[in-house]
Amino acid sequence: LEKLQAYINYAKSFEPVLGTHAARVLTTFYKSKRNRDSYSSTEAGRTTLRLLESLIRISKAHARLMASAHVNVRDAVVAISLVEMSMQMQSAVGDDSVLHKDFPMDPDKVHKHLSEKLLTDLNLEDLNHLTDEF
Image (tube, rainbow, N blue to C red; front, top):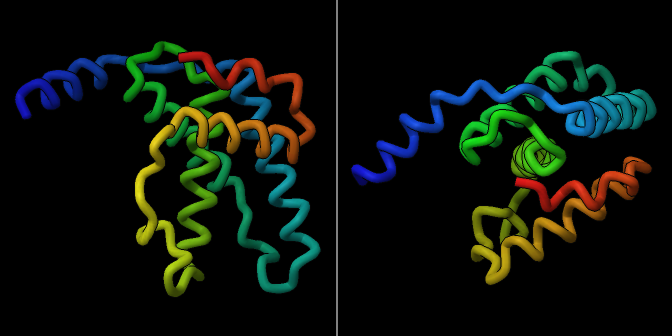
């Protein structure tokens, strides 16, 4: 517990700067989500600038947790994943809920797959090689 507290205090000293590639991922996701929501009568108006601001804050928090001075693509992908999962949780019922799943045996492999899918969906395949950066 003491080591964890010491690490958290150490991580708090970082003020990560949003990198250009991470900013590109976040803004592309935001624009894509906003565009998709405009075609849905139930989702229209739910994607606001606050979503983008939240994604930036979460990305910076993840970079800080990773003791990094820069927000990279990996941090942006993690932020998007967290937000997407939280949105799914609002409507998730039953065993499909992420709360009822085990931790993956190989989280790096799962993250790599998730990153590739997300970046492909956003037409940002050129950034796939940057998801392994720490």
